[in-house]
Length: 137
Image (cartoon, rainbow, N blue to C red; front, side):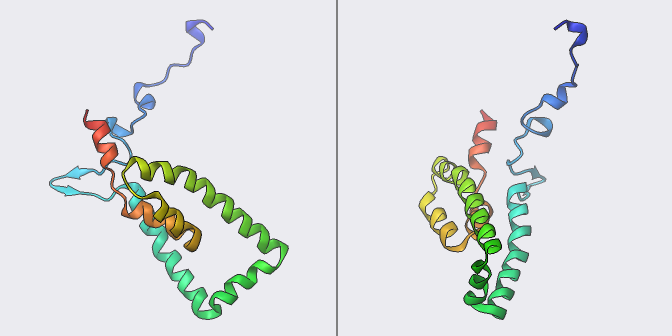
């Protein structure tokens, strides 16, 4: 490939650490205030309405009402899809928890028992110390 046929990209588009060399999960510091990371913010935004929906479903149908949905082939497909998605999330969550010194089995147990609440709580309660240490060296 000749040099003339190569596409030239601006240097900023090659920045793998986010804007200004900052890792995306690192908390932003501005005038002594640490802002919530994007991961925590997104987890909180999802967790609050999802908790309300779960509460509403439990109050109107109970556990039996939620489980009755899984008696048809369409319900089975949704359930298997949820299991696959949560297993994929756990393939990230377990090594990440170990790297951060957190007990991964707590989060696996919460995910198995409570579904999406496990990973959402993991992201919400986690810190970004590992990313800060990597960028400060």
